[in-house]
Amino acid sequence: MNTIKVHDTVEVIYPDCLTLLSEEERQAMNFAKAGEGYVLKNDDLHIMISIACLKLNWFTNLLSASDLRRSAVKNLEKLMRQYFFKPLRFMDHKIGEELGQGFAYEYQNKGIDMYGETYVFKKDKMAYYFHFYTRKECTEEALVIWNELLDGVNSL
Image: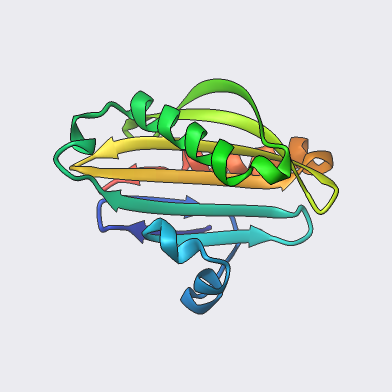
């Protein structure tokens, strides 16, 4: 098991089968635009996980995690329209001491069917986003790793 700290307030313990990308690799993939965070991957199961936090301004701090989830769905619908983005369901998952507000979705990338999940929660005027992507054919096995990661989150 390995550990990363996000904004010195959240600790993520993740399994050895995931590789942490360098900051240069993260920037090359445009994940750096998502704010402070990390990207983990597993090439064998085609897993990509991004974890980021953003400082909330006075207005967004008034929003609930559920509101931030709805906003994330709308943003992905716009950004991924060309990839046939299809929201599937809303769901919640305890992430550390917080209740993550999440949603599952499908899309296509270069003709490959993909599955994704996103969770968001608020803590100390920050929004924390956890994104998971995998090939649809790998979903069952990849979700075991994803859920292990989510269950390994702790507040500091």
